[in-house]
Length: 86
Image (cartoon, rainbow, N blue to C red; front, side, top):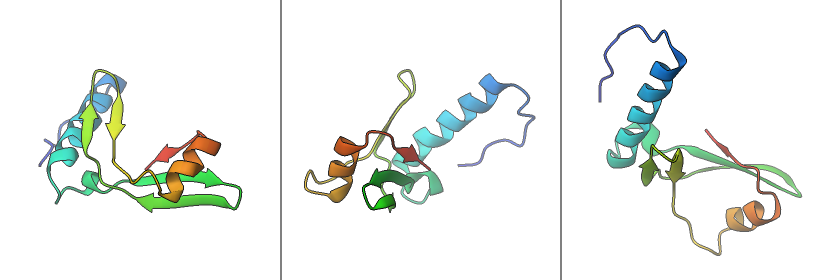
């Protein structure tokens, strides 16, 4: 996906373009936005994991990835709810 090289001079304009790129990333496995990094915290420190962006809900500002309920990141999020999506 190519984003026109236009002037991004308002915050709303930048946010609209970012959400458009995220939507595209959820459907195109070759898009860099398809492979974000999820940052979690545990008692041992910070953990970074590559995940797959599966869905984007722009009106509600929600990004979705799937994981196995047995994965360590699930316990990290239960214990320390602050996460980062990079």
